[in-house]
Image (cartoon, rainbow over all chains, first blue to last red; front, side):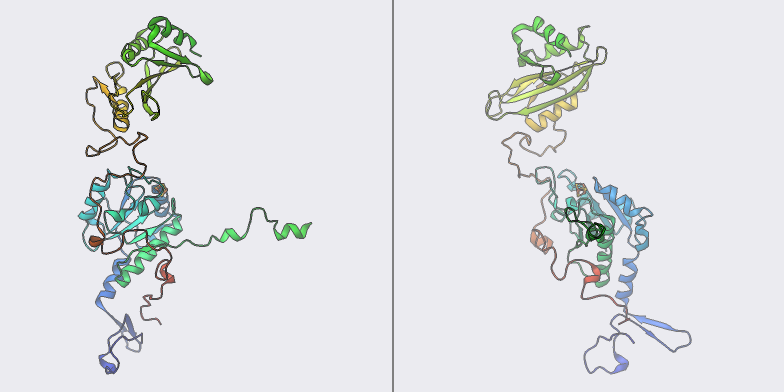
Length: 203
Length: 195
Ligand code: SF4
C-alpha cells in the first residue's frame, strides 16, 4: 500500500490514498487514485505547445524538437499553430514592445488550463536589451510558469525546464520556477593554465 | 578611388561642397543641405557619375555640435564601380529645424531608409510621400537614437501587469532558493505511491 493521507484515527477502510495505490492479490488487478492526480498526470504528458518564436533562441528550440534531444520523449512533441489547440506557450526569444500586444492576445486566446515557458534570458528578463525596444521579461505582460535562463539555453536546460513544468503540473503548483544551472561534466577535465596530472607524470 | 567624383562635384557645385576627404579610400563630400537634392540628381544622372544604387541613408547625432545632425548617404555606381559618401549637416542645438529634401523621387529605395532616419532622429524629409514611423509604433514619442534620449527609458505599447494583478512580485526572482530549480531537487515529489 502506498502512503495514506487521512486524519489520524480514521479507520483503515475509510482512509484516502494520497496519490495512487495498487492493491495486490486480486486476480484482475486494479488501481485507485485521486481523480485530480490522474488528470494532472495525463496533462503533464500531453502538452500541446504553441511556439512563439521571435529570435535566435529559435535555433535551440529546433534542436530541442529534433531527434537528438527529442522533446517527444516527454510528451510535448506536437506543436499547434493555433493557440486554441495549445496548452503550453513557449515564448522563445526577444519580445519587443511592438510584439507585446500580439503575445498577450495569443495568451488570451489559449484555453484553460494553460502554461507558459519563458525560453532564454530575453524572454525571462529582457536580457541585455535594457532599452526602449524590449519588454523586460514576458511576466510584465502575461503570467509565466517556468523560466529557462541561458543565451540561448542548451537543449538540456530546456528539457530540465520542461520536467520542472511537468512536476509543477502534477503538484498543481502555479508559482514561477527557474531552471538551475548544472555543473558541466567536461569542466573538470581541462583547466586552462593548470598543467594536467598526466603531463606532469610524463615529464 | 573616385577622386574624380569629388573633383567633378567641386567643379560643378563650388561653394556648396563644404569639405571633402578620402580617409582610407572612402571618398566623402560634406555638402550644404539646401543643395542636397540637386547633388543627388547630378550624381544619379550625369553619365560620368551614374550612381544607380542607393546603398544606405542614415542619421548621426553630435550633441555638442551645431548643426547637430549629419545625414549620411552612401551611393554606388554599378556602371563605373565607384562609390561615394555624401553628408549634410542640419538642425539646431535642440534638434529643431532638422529638415532636408527627400531623395525618394530620385531613388525608390530612399523611402524606408528616410522613414527610419525620421523615426530614430526626428529628421524631416521634405517631399517624402509617406513620412511615418517605421520601426517604432505610432504611439511612441521622442526619437530614441538621439543622444539625449535616456538610455533606460521605455514607452510600453500596452500597460504592464501590476503586482496585484500578477499576485506575485515582478522584480527579479530569487534564483536559487530551496524551492527553486530542478524538479528532482524538490522536497515534494509525486511518487505515485511507490514510497
Ligand atoms: S536569450 Fe540570447 S539567444 Fe535567446 S533570443 Fe535572447 S539574445 Fe537571442
